Amino acid sequence: MQTAKVYFTSLRAKPNQNLLQKLSKLMDKAGFNTLPVQDKFTALKIHFGEPGNLAFIRPNFAAEVVKKVKSAGGKPFLTDANTLYSGQRSNAVDHLLSATQNGFTEAVVGCPVIIADGLKGTDQKEIAINMTHTEKARISAAVADADIIISMTHFKGHEMAGFGGTLKNLGMGAASVAGKLFLHSTSKPKIEVENCTGCNACVKNCAHDAIHLNADKKAFINYETCVGCGQCVAVCQFDAAQVVWENASALMNEKVAEYTAAILKNKPALHISFIMDVSPDCDCWGYNDYPMVPNIGIAASTDPVALDKACADLVSAAPLLSQSAIACKTPENEPNKNQDKFKMAHPNTNWMAGLLHAEKIGLGTLNYELIPV
Image (cartoon, rainbow, N blue to C red; front, side):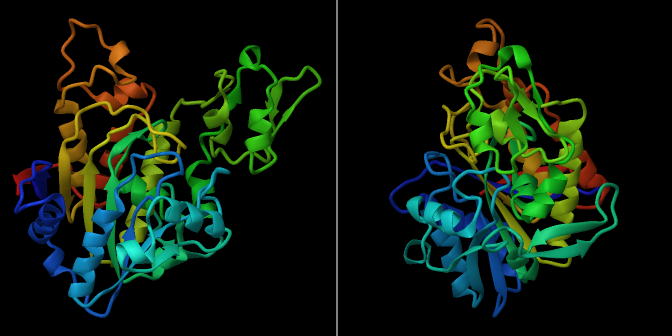
């Protein structure tokens, strides 16, 4: 049975070995030197963070990766794609302003910052994969055109995927807006009318004009227009807009795995996960809640499936922080080590379905060896 190597470094540092130096060493051990980056366009896929959220990866780490790529003769660029929801990263103008606000500028990271799917999220390439759910994946053009992929992922929870790891960062994060529509297409929300106060927040924040108030001042959704982006769920403060779960989490995670396969098709790649500030929700929110577990470390691998599984296992094995949002869900006398913290945060999610499907389609393996660096 195939076993992948996942390299790991803790966040312990000392005067002659800071975290940037440890990251560089980790990348070398994980196979950076095997990437043929000489004269190649190298996409550094990262999440720039929604303004107001402070859990995203520090630009300093990105600058270290850029430095290594440039020293090897590559042409790096830092990139992310526009969002489906109507936040501050739904078009290239606002997205670049948000990236700048969070410190991702050429002056700081040492390379251009490019919004991968263009001004309005329509710059895309279709990549044929003919898999279970996806015939052709709609991938952001700049990522599709890149020669090399290096993913830099903030490993954290996610309200629909379970957790946001490497597969989510690539498969969802590098999809064009049309691709994101496809990935969300099974997760259209519902309105619990009795909870609706008629505050109109969902109406104001719907980018697709799919939700309105009826004569009774209650929200209702036009499902012919709704794309399932979940913005109404995000902004509703009264638990009126809700996700219809059923099989939505498992199916979306399987689609994300297929999109990741499309992105990595015929491309050398290295993946890095930063297991720190492990917030229960995605960095797409304009805030970050208290971490669920203590900061753990940084992991890297050429196998994205093994990397996600290793990171999930490390978080599950870590103790629950008492001030976290999910701590109240665990009785004081119940051990919380070796529990699925992401399932605790979002009980209806199924992150394992995505990894199993990813292994099935040949994207990687769930079997791994964790190698300290």
